[in-house]
Image 1 (cartoon, rainbow, N blue to C red):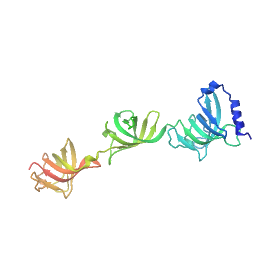
Image 2: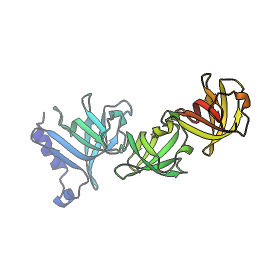
Image 3: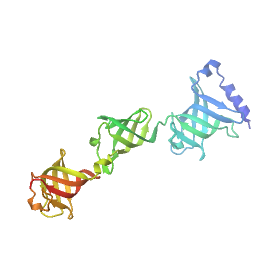
Image 4: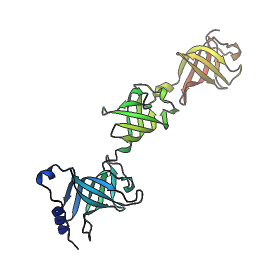
Amino acid sequence: MKTKTAILATIFSLFFLPILAIADARSEINIDSNGKMSIKNLKVTMVPEPGKSKFFYARAVWDNVFIRITVLTNDKTDISKKYGEKASVFDIKDGDILSVEGILPSSSDTLNVQASKIVDLSLEREDKEVSGKVIAMMTSPYGFTIRSSKGNIIGVNILGGTTITKGARAITRSELAPGDTVLSVKGTFDYTNSTIDAASIEVYQDKGVFKPRNFQGILVSISGAALPVTAVVLTEGKQYTVYLPSTAGILNKAKGKTNLTRFVAGDAVRFYGTVRKTNLSEIDADVLRNLNF
């Protein structure tokens, strides 16, 4: 059985390189006197059985010179993507570039490493959550861009299954606009082009919209002559559906009680109510007052 020192001597006797060639090396190997090893820029050449193998073959490369290395893993091996997300040995593919830490295994006369830590530098798509202000809507890809609190520009891709919520409401992309505050985008972030494939998007909703207040406008229609009823009112440039329960107050111009038979389309009306959190075009009202009589 060769000692670790003998193995090290064999390696460098077989792959002797001039000093200048080493200085230009793409890979870097360090082995201390206890057999602890660290390797930078190790290229995977073959995964014997993708999805099954817990070991793979790789090369440390310096221009046209290389050393073959077998990388062994076990259940204790810490494997992560380039930016820190946990990964599995089964995520590692042919051609990936790795950073590996480990130890020379015993009873070996070839260069193997029992890996304690692997960072796959080629895995640059990770689960992530981002936030920021909408700065532009995009037509291709289908989505928008945000500026994060750190000033980074991030493209948000909206997919078929992406959910978008604003407060308690589900909304569509068409309801977004530059200036909106995006509280959260969760999805798969691609560090190569600073984009995220969104699984869910949460947009800030101003809660002041839901404070009870007075509205005034023109009655478009009313569903009946006895409570409860639904009225459609044009006010503040849009049509609202107003829900009046059986306990609502029905008043005339002088704030005296009256009945709904006096209300007709075109009347000026005032009502007090609250915009529904689930639909900004619907209002629950406590009072409806006719200003025409």
